[in-house]
Length: 241
Image 1 (cartoon, rainbow, N blue to C red):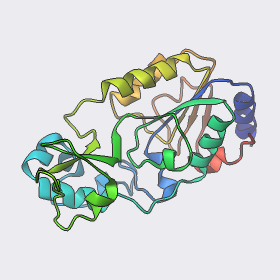
Image 2: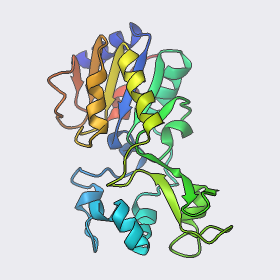
Image 3: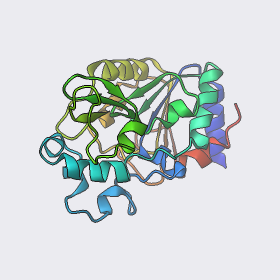
C-alpha cells in the first residue's frame, strides 16, 4: 500500500509521463507473453517459436509461420484491460505524453490511447510483399488459405510486425527516444527488459522519476526510484486520476 501511495504522489506531481510497456501489459487481457513459465517460448512446436517468427523462416516456410502466427499471435478477441484504460485516461488528462510499447496487439489504441509508438509493429497492419496493398488483421486471420494472398496481384501478405533479423522502424524509434528523453516520469511496466534494442531505450531517460512495475525482478530495478512487483493493471487501477 505504501508503494501505491508513492506512485500516486509521483503521478500527481508529474506533467509529462511516458509509459514503456511489454508483454506483461497484455497478459491480463488473456494474451500470452513470451518468456514466463506459460509463455510462448515454453510451448512445444515443430520448430522453436524464436525460429518461426524470424525473417528467414517467413521467407522459406511461410505455411509453418502462418500456422503459428495465426494460432498464437493473432488474439483478435482480446479486449483492453485496466492498464490500457488507465493510460488512456492519463493521456486525456494531459499527464501522459506517449505510450511506447513492445506489443503488437493494438490494445492501447483499442483502449483509447492516441500517441502510441509500436516498436515491434502491429498485427493490424498487413501488406502485400509484391504490390504493398494494405490488409487488416481480420482478412489475414480468416483467409481461406493458410497463407493469405493479395486479392489484387496474388502476392503473399506479410504482417507489419518486426520479425527476428529485421530492424525496427526508424521513425518509430526516433519518436520513442524523443518521448523518453523529454519526459519527467518514465513508467516501465510488464517487461523483462531483455529484448534489444527496445530495452536499451530507457537509458535516454533523464527525468525525475523512474518507476518499474513488473511481476518479477528486472535488470533496471536498481536504477528505479520506485519498484512495484505486481500485475500492471491491478497496480494502476488503484491510482486515482
